[in-house]
Amino acid sequence: MLILPFPTPNFRIKEENNKEFIFDEIRKIWVRLTPEEWVRQNFIQYLIQTKKYPSSLLSVEKEITLGDLKKRYDIVVYKNSIPWLLVECKEMNVTLSEQTASQILAYQLVLQVAYLIITNGLQTFCFDTNANQFISFIPEYA
Image (cartoon, rainbow, N blue to C red; front, side):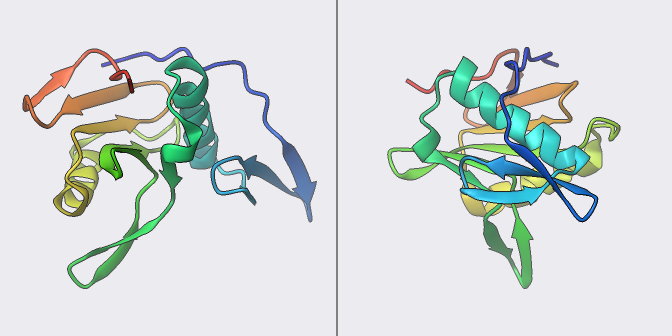
C-alpha cells in the first residue's frame, strides 16, 4: 500500500444552485464536486505536478464497452499512443476491496495497460501487470 503526498490543491471551485463544481483541467469542463471527484482531481494533480506526467496524455472519465455494458474508467495515461496506466478512484470513505479490484480488472480486459492503480485518496495500490505483482511506487513516466 502507498500513502501519496498530494500536492497543495489549486483548484477552481464554484457553487451553483447550492452545489459545488470543480474545473477539470483535463476535460476542460466544470464537473460536480463529489467525494470521488475530489480524489480523482487530487490524483490527477499528483500525476501532473509530482510525477511530471504530461497532462495532454491523460484521459478522464471516458466510456469503454465491456461486452454489452458501457462503463467509464476514471483515469488512463497513454504512452506511445496506447493505454499504459489505469487508475480507479473511490471516495475516501470507501474501502478498497475485492470489488474494487474486480472493477479495474474488468476494464483491464479492454485496455490492456502495464499498470493498474486503485486509490481512495488515503490508500493506494499499484499493480505491475507485466511482472504480475504489486509494487511500492507509482511508475515514472519518462
